[in-house]
Image (cartoon, rainbow, N blue to C red; front, side, top):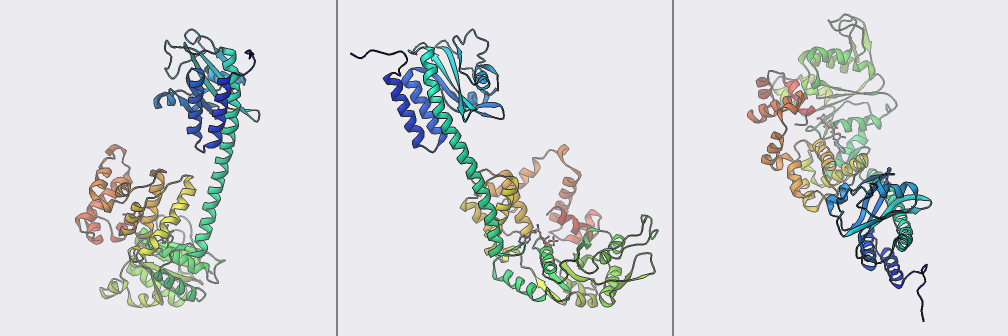
Length: 507
Ligand SMILES: Nc1ncnc2c1ncn2[C@@H]1O[C@H](COP(=O)(O)OP(=O)(O)OP(=O)(O)O)[C@@H](O)[C@H]1O
């Protein structure tokens, strides 16, 4: 005859332990297997709601449960020491609440208390001497085992769960580490196979650009980089400098469209103290700063007639005077200029000096717009995506249909626009993947209506001065059919100023 021993596990208990052991060894989906295990436990022992809390930053929150809805899961959080659950975690001992209806330690945050439920037992999950969570179970009127038996079985189950959760956390951490390494090596790989320094692009048109750079970098010739805004003209200038004999010397930049005529001359050639009202001190200009190195003059088509004369003299004689100064200064500077304007046409129209044009245009490098090298788009998307995900420590995936949208978009702002778009995708997107529909909102030109709806949603009082200025420029450009000089006239600013602002706001 078999007699029942009080300390022995019952047949039911053994069976449920067997079930749980196989559930957690079989499945890789931790939440699912924990929930299935809780369900097996609840059914075998006629328990009420069962729950597993995970301890993170001294806060216990539900990671698996039976009998809790989504809202209850969200609100049932306990600090270490708070309520019966928090107490079990803090004391590292089981806590038994015999009657949940008259014990103030039972906080009932989930609002699950009902007449059926009588007691609550919380047992800590301990792995390698650390509490990593708590398992909690309600005993109801139908529960047939007593407190002692429940604590015993929950303690055995808790050690199984603790090992399971702990090893799962280590695997997740290791996976994240490997993912970061993978990203890093992918970027390294990208930069070796497809890049020219920082320049991404494998298309034939870009390969031709790389060839010219390689050929002329070591010489001292002046280079004129031409291309639409955002095509990478500055990157090319920097690539030339890095490959030149001057690479240990300064690479100095100046955007000629960003400043007024008077300031431009002072920025280029410097000024003497007292040369004009604001000239409180003598200051070196960019030519002097770049001595021995390379000077990159962006938007060269925007400089005034008088600055053109002075620039020509530096290119011919390598000398100049500071504004307000009489001393002649000699420099050794290699010049790389860039423009997105049609300088030849400007020469024909008498807006740009022909002699200066020929001095600048010794070696022209034409950068293709992105829409003419569509095969590079995917490469650029992946490069910016990986870089941005690494920066923001966030994973985002782009669906195939969304990628097709990116590939077929005309990219009027070229690589800069693509780079900014990917940044927005990473900031706004989620791991489920960016769809073609999301893309409609991210790429205004794909869907002007949706974009303007979005634009209008910013309440007036939340707009900055920059927002308002950007809007005014967009309106003026829309009304003038994209004509910069007409739009500038309407806004009462110079063409150079509007050019600078268009660039600044990425319009
Ligand atoms: N081929 C490329 N590979 C990687 N990044 C690029 C490439 N082309 C442009 N970019 C990026 O796009 C942005 C704009 O590039 P850059 O400033 O060189 O363009 P630009 O032609 O000089 O523009 P602008 O005419 O408006 O001055 C930069 O952040 C740059 O790093």
